[in-house]
Amino acid sequence: MRSDQHTNRSVDASRPLLAALSLVAASLTLSIATSVGAQSVAPASAAPVVPPTQAAPTSGYLLVLGRTLDRPKLIRYSMTLPPIYAASGGRYIATGRPGSGIRCITGLCESRSAVVAYWESPSAVNEFWWGSAYRQAVPLRDRAGVFTVVGLQGHLVSQTDAQPFPAPGALLVALTNGDTGQAGASAWLAAAQAAGGRSLVPFERASVSPLEGDALFDRALVLSFASTELRDRFVESSATKDFIRASTGGPSVFLLALIAIDAPPAPPAQSSTTPRP
Image: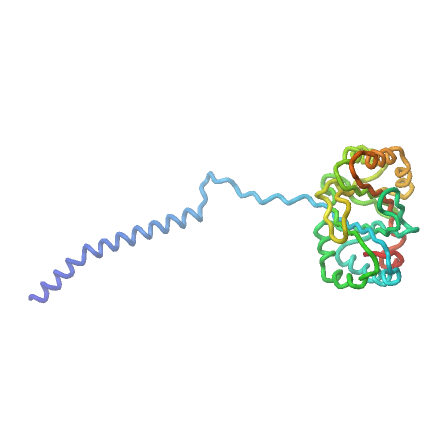
């Protein structure tokens, strides 16, 4: 009889503790359920999720100016390049060497070869330049020449017809090193467009990325024409002569190089006569 009474007293004493524990458990369950529900069910007034806007595509260019020191070695190196360019999506749109395919109109461009290549994006230019295939080819031109190489970011493709003219197009490239000629460049660009030229690269410092050599210039204006005749006619125009005078005749130290470069005479796989970095 005493044992039963003792047991009953123990059960009665534990009931308040069990009730308290049950209350805590119920409170925790309600809190967790509320939290999960708040995360999984968005309020009716929540704003819809808008995906980030994709940047408009831009084209990419590689501009190379070189002075040849060992022509046979440079030709052998050049013969390895066409498949590397093609594999990265690049193609030559202008090439020239002294006496063939290039004319230095004014500035620091005498006795220089030139290459301009085109890709569909600036990132593709970097992938080519720093890619393992081209890095393996670079030692082949060691001591064969001295080069200045810059990557160029083209205009927004969605905003302007900034693609180079197809063959037999021709380029006119202006390289400068400061703000002095920018106002004159705007007028010159307008005259070029009126003469049938296309501006491929904005005349801005942000468009130029030095890749190799001593880049004396920090702006590049690249104009594409449908033919060498149209390009050469504009080179001889009063607008171009005024641009040269305005850019080089001021009191400030200001560099300008103006270079006419022709389209390659044959597809890259068939042409190995122009040294190409």
